[in-house]
Length: 178
Image (cartoon, rainbow, N blue to C red; front, top):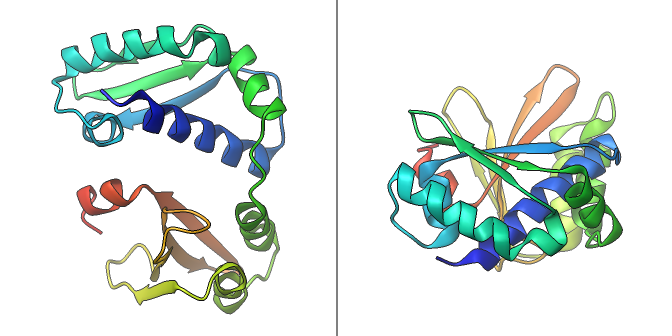
């Protein structure tokens, strides 16, 4: 099981939350389907095997994230609860991500347009993939073709006077069938 990718994903999700909402010393709960965890850990576990693997993972990151609480339901949805100490650790060791910070600030603005949001991507790379979607939920798929500044897949939609986004790991984007 590859722990590094999962640890980076947890850190990235907490960093994104802190950029959006600000930092509060509190427990953060992250939810993952089993398929996502199998991709992130480069494994092919059943739910019970993943539970055991995540408990082992929790011991390897205890000095950074504190004591993680790991649980899952009968449908294979996992919850990783990162305690206050872990949330604080991420805050103190925040990776500077000017792209994500600017993207969040842009979509936060009332009246933001899709063109303004797309220009944020284009500011950070000349290798931006923009694809129109016709799935009833999102209008565009956007990502950096060379994986820089990140490798996520961003699904964008204009909702009234706001642009919303969801970001997915590449394998999750494929799995969710958008």
